[in-house]
Length: 392
Image 1: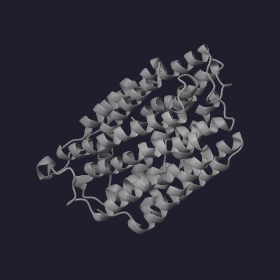
Image 2 (image 1 turned 120 degrees about the horizontal axis):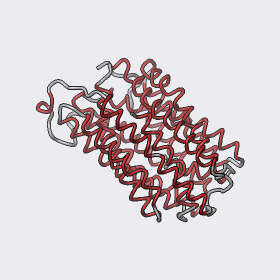
Image 3 (image 1 turned 90 degrees about the horizontal axis):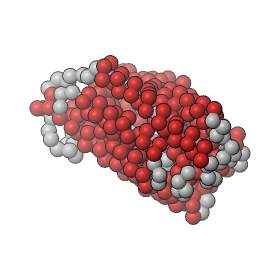
């Protein structure tokens, strides 16, 4: 299900910043506002949906609702005539993500033993990333077959190039529909002992979630403030000479790295602990951002994206597994909601600040800003998070 969903999502996502700048005339600040607003809305809903999923005996209905909404609205990017319309579509898409993500993560944690938790989350991320390889390759084939590839970010696309770009967005509906079929038919729910009656209704969960958990969220928020949307990396790659038609290939190569080592990295966190993987990944992130600040050629972008994939592989599974490690099983949905909310609270200001620095100073300074906060968060993580997964 996640594999096909990401095929659909990633057919569109790497092309959105180019669509906004080359067709709709949006600047970097507005690109950051769109992605930041979309992720913030999603994260607010992740808290609510996670809490609700703890109050019911089964989580699948929320997961289906979220995926259905996002899959329906996403292809309508093809008919957008303004950046504001793209904003509305992206926000609605992320509403669907907000509804599904926390219940899905809690369902995954419910479905595996503690000893295999990191590997399970790593495998889930690998499936996402495998779809993120196939999706951009499909987009590349469509673009290349119609001769799109000579324009760079900020230049206006011709009517025929614009039409081809919009056709890619329509084709993204096909894998989204397949994902929904898989979800409804094949994904199994997990009934939990005790059900809703044993769970207290307070959304805050302050008496149920440990201090370690709240400290961890604080560090995640610091990192997120420097973790702006990846759309800026794609714009930077175009600045460095990566053509539009090659952008999906660049994105696919990046996700291939994530997919190939994500399961292994998640399993490694089961053996050596979550903290070494998370801290190491954030340091890699800082190095990549500093690299983008200094980059001056197209091949630099290709190399940096390859290393950037290592950051995701090291952290995607480990970060979520750590949430499940340090909270009671009856509060997992709520905990994942708070975790996703902390990311969302940082997403909008992170992208707005990054875009403003990009427009008013230069891209290099924006990347240095992101790298600095990543290093601060890595230092904080060393003090507040447990080094090994909990056995429960």
